[in-house]
Image (cartoon, rainbow, N blue to C red):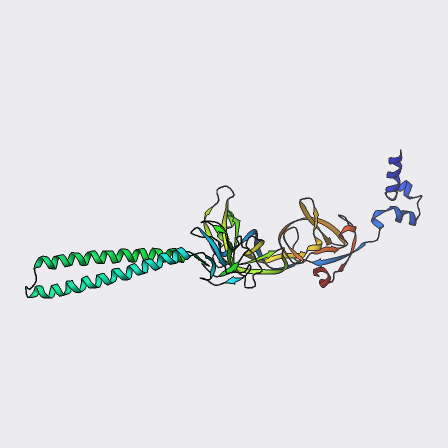
Length: 369
């Protein structure tokens, strides 16, 4: 009975017998069609060109990176760098104790000098024997004997020189140098520590240029080419955009993810980007010249679907839409709205499908502000 009574009251203006007993004010209060139109702000869908962008998550890598270690076992005599310092290629970072190696090299140098002197003496005797053999004033056997001595002396000199090079190399390895210019990280050793090969001493990174590695779906492979410009953002610098260019595309597609690796280079003169950082990468892959754009305030989300209210003959008509690219303050509409139509951008929450509205042009600066 209660439901029936509510229905009679709700639709009293549509029932002639009951409506006859209601005055004009009652009919206006009960009749939905006589409600005043809802004031709303509208914007006109417009056409413009849109760049289709591809987004990906990338990881920053140093242009060159290495963990400095020693090739030989030794005790650290001196550390010649500061953490965070920028060093040049060839700069000495660590000196190991080298007294034994220096003594060994001095011995090898003396040996080379002795053997070279002996070689010079044998060479002089052999040259003299050759001159005497021209006048047959020396036995042929003596000449051959001196030739054998000369070859033996040459072999000894070559062997001693090889030993000297080994000694010199062992001494050089007591100095650990920077293989390239870069920034020093945190050191892991102290003076006096005994280190063995592969013990980490410090990291060295060249971050004047940052490599940005990311992956794109296989279907977008034709949209990527070397030299293409990319933009990147990171939460560490929310108000900054980093620009770079694609330097290489992997030659293989991952069989599991069906994605291909891409590497871009970003100039990092101020060293803001650090290896290991995550960045949101965007790159333009296509351009649509006649795209339909509306303010983003007009879009209403309902779960996984989106819709807008289009004003036609004073009525708000709900339209499902397909969204394309998003720009600051605007969205591209792939389907559902055509250029020139008025969409509600202000007062959307107060209207429903088919409701009467009083549209007014929205302030452009406010809509996009």
